[in-house]
Length: 114
Length: 114
Image (cartoon, rainbow over all chains, first blue to last red):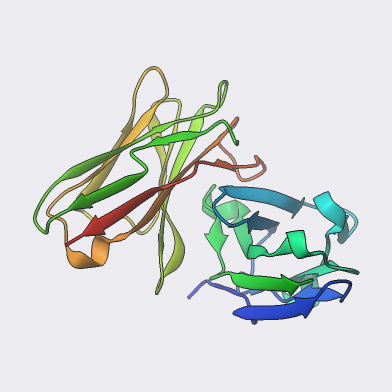
């Protein structure tokens, strides 16, 4: 079955530590890739997206993600996290041939201690 | 604030009942998407409407139905409710109807079925 996997359910880091959250998908077709973030008590917001071109994409708040087609991966990174990055992070995939729906991973909760 | 509004914020009801969730998209957005978020299934796409017409269907149960009205607001109707329908229901909107458009999410409606 088609799916999006986020390997880490809960990540705990200290401020200034580097972050990498894994995301793998199992679709063979052409995909659009997204990372969304949900801060406590807030709605889902788009962090970054990849459609085509440079596989390293930069988003808001210093986040970036790298698309590795051969590994079906789209990992999220940030070199130095802040306490305010505490949130839940969702990877999402849109399979272009299959329509417009976003298929979400189950999310990773990031807790950053100051 | 994403510009997408959802009402009500919370809904508590009993098994067997029927409820209606409402979503108003951002000004100018023609597409509305409905998602269900539960602890075991994560965020799952239910259905999409584009300018009043159903565009895509996901894992939506037959007991659930939706529509988009001429003013572009949308309603999700859930009937013969079961305990397992307890979840957070998100609405999202986008300008266009394809997978390249960023989806903007509302704050969600938390449904509790007792």
